[in-house]
Image (cartoon, rainbow, N blue to C red; front, side, top):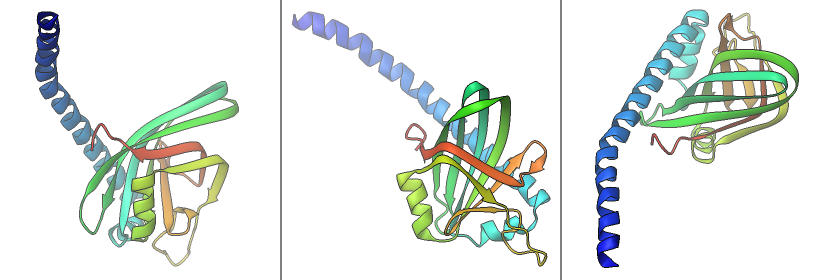
Length: 188
């Protein structure tokens, strides 16, 4: 019996040793891809809305997500990945997004979302507890003739602003339906 357990244990141990470097390489590669997408998204946002750079730099922290959604007839969903960055410490937290939606429709959408957090409380709640939008809510975009820091952003709760970029540019309306943002335990 002991030999049988030992014989079964050795291949499992070898598999774990061989798979560990592969997994570490996959994690490093995915983190790199997320960082590159964050950089690309911010550059694009700053080009479309220059005041956003000041708002993000002066915030407590921000999060950038790249999302993909699809809806066929009465059901749809989406996935995304990104990172939250604490401006005070520079710490990155890798995150993911899941979305479910119901209702008539058909289409595929790629978009990026940039969250801006005005203070530590709302940033920490987002990163540590995740965030869930239920039902359907549409946030109005704030336009300010004087060029306010959050021009082109939608407020979704006190202290939290969102910029949404589509293939056509900065979205004029943000709709969130059954969307959940949470830490990606595989990457942190």
